[in-house]
Image (tube, rainbow, N blue to C red; front, side, top):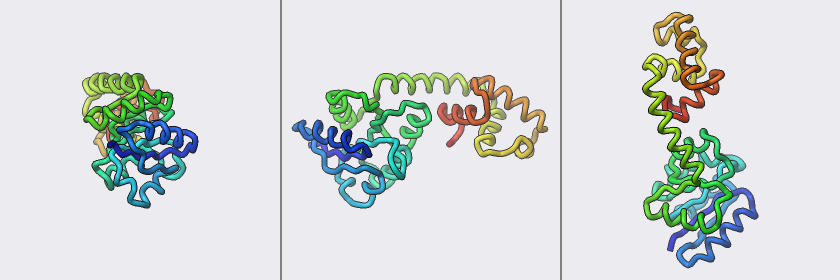
Length: 209
């Protein structure tokens, strides 16, 4: 019997999943919550084999919740089930410990199959999410070849919020030299500004979040 917990703030979605999953002879929902805080306050979550976790939750978001839950219950297999397919949410959730990422439009039969795949050691993902993950690795390899070590260092300092002058002092370049490298970084990452360059750097694992 695969024991499942659910964290989903939409009552109708949560109850729908409970009904679907409990109908399967191999599955059993042992607990369900509307937020991560309630799930972490008791001990029922620790009895689960699999956790279905939403991202947009009141209080602690699912991308942070998966990290906290993984630290407290390292054996729980967490699957994100969400409406969001943005790169930053996908990769933050996966880096923080999720083993799969499904969109809410996933059919009941696909959700059941995904749970079984995860328990058997797989990493189920909705097709367009899998495509994004594959694409990110391909882009990461390309960007790692294109960005010089100096550019990676400067991108990391940009992520820290430092001014051009402060960056120039840390990397031992003139301010004009820093600007030159930043222009190259924007061009290579196809970014329009600092925020976009940093977001892409994090998504492609070129820098740490």
